[in-house]
Length: 213
Ligand SMILES: [Zn+2]
Image (tube, rainbow, N blue to C red; front, side, top):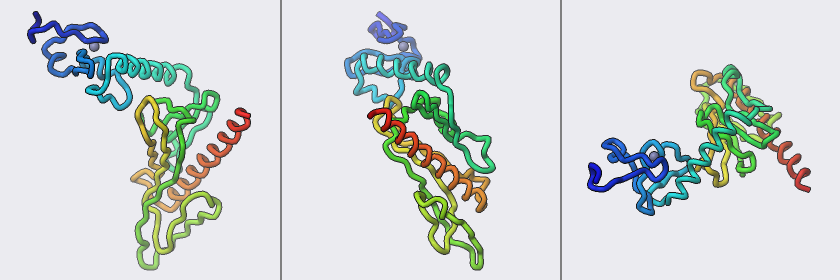
């Protein structure tokens, strides 16, 4: 008999539930006990009360496979960044594997390019000051949203919406304008970055369709 009247052992690592493990561990849907170390290795939505032992094993395996990808196989062939923050990588792509990472999200996750089902540039606006000139020419970017008359762009986000994936992330949101840089030049640069990404995706998908044929 253990401290809690039964010998609770973690179903994954077989370690006995100690005082700490016993208090912070989780009971799975099939009644098995999962210690906090092992629950920390799970990726995805991690609704432990609904998960069985095999789900946990799959989840941990997905996390380990991702780690191997991120630290071994992943080699970025394209990098997307913007303006004065150009040294900050927002998105990187490994075209040879069809993978994408977001250093900006800092989640260490290698997303499958095929999991992106749509993407958009989302803008926020604020009214111009009286007499303020705002010369944001968006003509070269017909696929991107325009700034309404009498307003300026105060923030811009690149949003990638994802299909169901092992990480359990439904969208990647990348801030195209860092809080400290909000000049017209930075907005133009945000447009240019979004445009580059849109163009890249268009070509990538065209190539992919050709491969599939
Ligand atoms: Zn464990």
